[in-house]
Length: 170
Image (cartoon, rainbow, N blue to C red; front, top):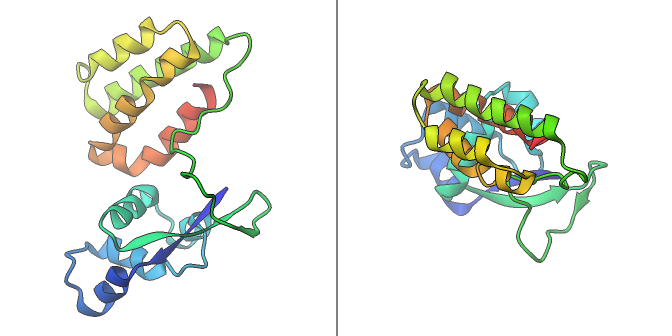
């Protein structure tokens, strides 16, 4: 499912008044959001590593909002009545559990935290990941891991890529 963002009234005002304190990068993304382009199309146009993070900041600040959704074939669809899928939309848990995938996820969590946060940072997340005996328990470490990664400059830039890599095995 693809997401289409649209500018809010606050976003339109920001383009003319420049009063929101946006960085040039955030402003460029705001300009490109038009209510017609999907996030994937924006990614192609902007060639950005941290687009997801920038869109999140603009949305949290009230400059943009979700204007529509695209289905898997790329055609617009109606907004669902309930909440949108979470950013940590996990695949169905394998049956039987996959020890190989769990080992890959544990190692990925440990290595990315070590690389982006330092060798001794967030050991509680690593320990909880290694103590997990099921995919469900391991998935409980996803949000703390992701929050730790995006707290770093390099992690912000690669957050979307890292998130998708971990979601493949968790």
